[in-house]
Length: 152
Image (cartoon, rainbow, N blue to C red; front, top):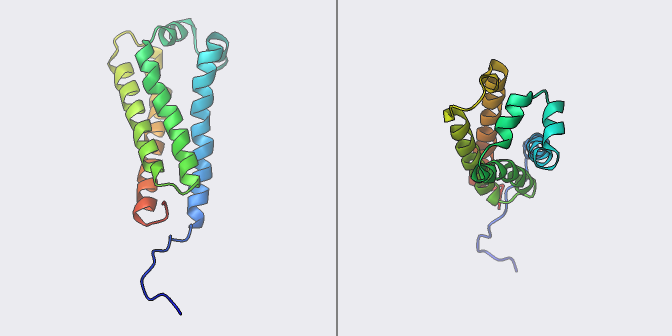
């Protein structure tokens, strides 16, 4: 006999979730590599990324609490990417935590009068805009998938 009660069924996973999830994972992995290398071998890594002595000194002089928000930003995004691929509704929370980390980090840096002018260049501003746009997109997308019942 068939149960006449309505049983909730999870929405089928759309192909775009896998595409967005993998792109998100690859993109956000770079932030984690950047964070890790900056902590493990800061001078060599930053020089390999084209930073000069002034930018390296500024980066190394940042307060420890700021590093916590930077970590929330990069590791929160990585967690969000993984949770998105696992179809977990907690991807939304992880991306939101990442956004908080990014916002605090960026507000500090761009209001800090000690920030070298070279770090405020057009290329850096474009990269900052791309980071913001991608994170806002991933947060929006995860929330949309949660609302659609794709994330559980």
